[in-house]
Amino acid sequence: MIYIETARLQLRDWKATDIDPFVRLNADEQVMRYFPKTLLPEETYALYKTIRTAFHEYGFGLYAVEEKQSGAFIGFIGFQHAQFEADFTPCIEIGWRLKKEVWGKGYATEGATACLQYGFTALNLQDVYSFTAEVNAPSKSVMQKIGMNFMKTFEHPNVHQDSWLRQHVLFHASRRSFTLSNEQV
Image (cartoon, rainbow, N blue to C red; front, side, top):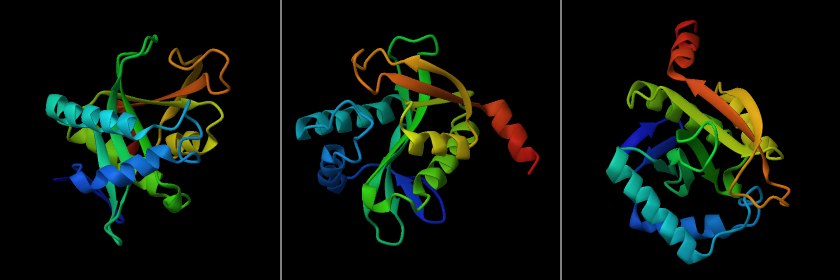
């Protein structure tokens, strides 16, 4: 099923044929640069199961992203439930991970904007958060471009205290502010 369609992308259900490119995506050191480590195949399979479970439980999750022109799986964009210990959790997080061959084409911004709109209108989400390592300038830029507002920095409790990735930024968008900003357009 296709949940969200943009000019160049389809955000859809996952297919069995997505698993091998998903394994390669999560094993790519450049793609995973701002994560504590790359994922082994069995860790990607476990993540895939977690994604599928979220769809069954909540009716939404991290959507597989397909490039319309090529029909290729290029990563994911979507929502997940963040439940680590922090003053803003549990919450709904919007996130993305795309293969490096499509970086710089605006796909993350295009897909995340449509996903955020879908979340507020079709899923009736009230608040959506996004966070990343403070040094991850590309993802911070996407957060700003899709209309999210910077809230604060925080130390991610699941990242080792000595890691250069521990310091994170938190962004937020609300249904109310999203609706107001779109009415003014």
